[in-house]
Image: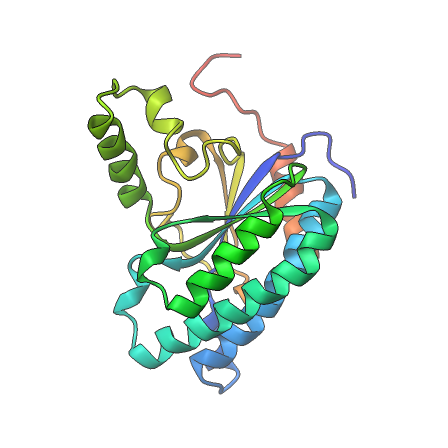
Length: 229
């Protein structure tokens, strides 16, 4: 399958792990485990297709409100995932970036994240950008406060340059799995002109084939960015 209009940067809101597990008669933690395994499969396929940047919504700033046992399991799974990333994706020249306030994460997870960023910081061709304790509104506030503290003018460009994704380009396409039709505080500033793709497929079942369907849909759209063509 080929598309003539391939997105450079794709954001993915990975929704539906808990509902998928429930449909199988399993605990929500089982859905998160299967969903974390699916990340590697989909991200690898995306890079093979020619996408250069993948941004994933792994843990939002609102997810702390979930039951403690679920949050603890997510933290454990994320530590395992980041460890796997360092070993596998560094061999493929993929740079790891994390957007969000990682200071609230467990010390063990923080160490793994910082280690992964350090080991991959020189890679330039591919970027895996993961939202951890991330919220789009909070990111905008962070950028504006930084500009105020530095005494710099607040403009569209200056805010963009102080976001977590300042050197990645804005997402051309944002995919949300699981059937919900909202962004849920994901990349609100960067996604102003992103194409949106919603699917009912729950994240654990969102296959490379499903990703290709999103690319095909994107290829058929005309991006005007507010202009007339």
